[in-house]
Length: 246
Image 1 (spheres, helix red, strand yellow):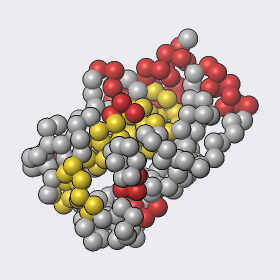
Image 2 (spheres, rainbow, N blue to C red):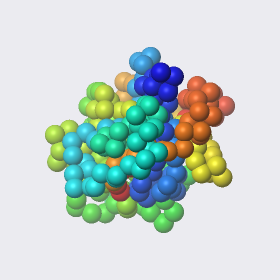
Image 3 (cartoon, rainbow, N blue to C red):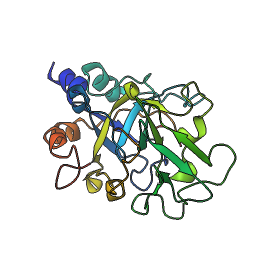
Image 4 (tube, one colour):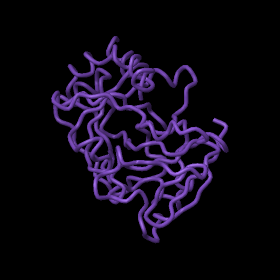
């Protein structure tokens, strides 16, 4: 029952199966996702790395990984989602009311303000992609939705490339599982996942009122050890900080 309680209300472990969030997250990393805070009415904020259920066949055609024996046991006791669940992980760029824009190679703009994304965008990538499949855009995020992008900008099938779906590329907030707060495995990569300072710019809120599927990580010990950290690392460092396919 304790494991089920942790899985349902507190944290859950997920494994990163792709390169779409490099270098923030590497293929094979295990992250811990805070599922508690949304129960108190908190919604995703700009800059957070979030896990969300596939909103409208973003993962169509991607194979469902076959769980091993340990993963089946952990799923049965509630420490990981079932293999059939299809979840993705991306960074929140815009929330309800925001206008998000990419022109040329960038910079990416939110409510007319340029973001300095050098701390998390994959080295060698440009913030915006010059292609006609969705890399150039200007959108206004509807209330109750978020706009998400991968940190590996030229290797991420995110909101930009799903604008033909029923949500026009936006992710409904009720599809969000929670915020990834800790890289828990491998141990030499243990770190929290803060909200980058670029999202603290004065004026950013001026016009705003407010890959393969991820598989659950088999390292239950990392989950047990990190539960106390979730509440400490919920926001930004100092004040609390803050797989899909590509």
